[in-house]
Image (cartoon, helix red, strand yellow):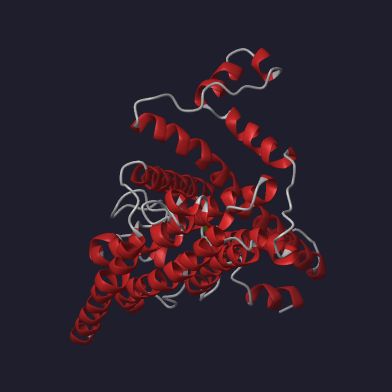
Length: 392
């Protein structure tokens, strides 16, 4: 076994390893194939980030279009680029769909004046939006967007696939709240400070519920998989029945905690404009505010991806149905498209709930977590512990 074979055997590489292995078989030496593998891992990581960022940007348009549909009015349909409007059919179609709003919002955030208030702590004030967005970009690299066949076995279509990917993404994803807390503290504003405190308290409250909702799922699938903390293996274990049918209470608890951790209405206590102006980002504008904006939608996309992998059958199109690995590249394409459609459905659900339910009161949000959801999650966990003992 040469050095590259030893290197490749130690990886859960996915598509990058498959391409590098093909290069090695084509005559490329071990060092060259290893360099190609590392380069491809970077490319796939950037691609995964690109998918999440594209969905985060598209979610802005979806938010406005769905809001218009629910409220019986038009969404964005007037923004246009003059030269693009000269292209027959294309220009008018993009304008009617509101997709040119993406360009308008991006240019607005990029070229607006960048305010830096004199009363803020400048270092932490500038760093807070970066801390808010960074966990999203890292978590995107461990999301398995599909499956394909490699070496006669199923392989994850992910930039990084390792045994503790579920633990990694839940822990790292929760770090985004530090951006909100730092923004509230560094702004030296009572509205921002209260928003940051609310964000931290809400994260602690609902993180417990989220963790306890995942524990019964891991106990349920543990006998059937080698690594129950691996998102890809969790997805593969649902080729028959989806976990949402086997664990409906866990799915509901996780979904409620996901709404709270992404600060989505009716749980948007950290940004409640009715009493906090804009909450923790009251003193922000222009590009810094845009980072918070994209970070929130990015967290929504990554959180939806985890929910899909754990409860909605991952890339399985229907319960009891999965794409055959024998279809080769078509299996990878179809599984990827299936996963993307499920993310779109989750985004629509997030927006639908926002424009349907009123915002909760802050004490109600806290009481819902500590007084209702946490005892329910503990009871659900204990019940499955007893069930697991009887099954064993």
